Length: 342
Image (cartoon, rainbow, N blue to C red):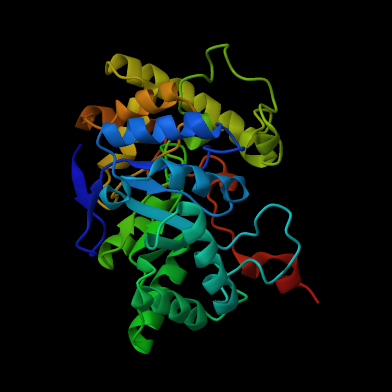
């Protein structure tokens, strides 16, 4: 499988990243999850992304078991910020030094490793001074527990601020950003992807299949009943097909499905290849729950979309467009009621 540079780290990674969110109690049991990871490694993927919050640590445990004897061949990424499960302790979350030094030890233990290649902040933490967070992460790099650092779903202004704070304080600058990006959710094309290009930041997009809307099942009569799972029931604004924003996604997915068929591709192949096509993107995250999912997504690795197909995609969903604002994932804390009202 083709490799690409991960920002300016000097490290090369496979052009597809295996996301392990659905490997664990949230989706796939341990033994099957390990088989999926091994199949991905055998297919040439050497970049794996997980997070402590996925299955409350269960995903990291499965990844750790799967990588026994193969750890040195993999670029391993994980994330912190969210509380695990229903933990009510306000200090067991976020981007404080106190939590970072504890969270990394927990992740190292679950992953059965003594270092993490890429340690990422899962979301912005506006309640914590950015310098404190970056200094704690820099210390982890100096200690050898972490090789590189990154963040996920940061707005463009905060991406730039993190670069400047790190530069001005003599800290390590974040090397990667992990934004939501798909044909149905193109908002990051306006600012985030260009900002990452200018600063040499590797981009690892999540949800290139738009949470399943670009798998080809919508509009075929084979849709899963709503809600399909407890997880989706908690994300009504993103998945409920009755909502106007999601209706727009379904209508666009139907048109895209017809376009993919005309191009001799599956919609899955076209959707992942579209994200891969952007020059700022390093490796989209694929998140299979079954071996069948993995095989269908691996098939996108060698697909190159023609200019005609890309132009048709732009006609269906214009550049920079977000069909459902709930998919953007970029919450602005300045617009929360507590910040606007007295």
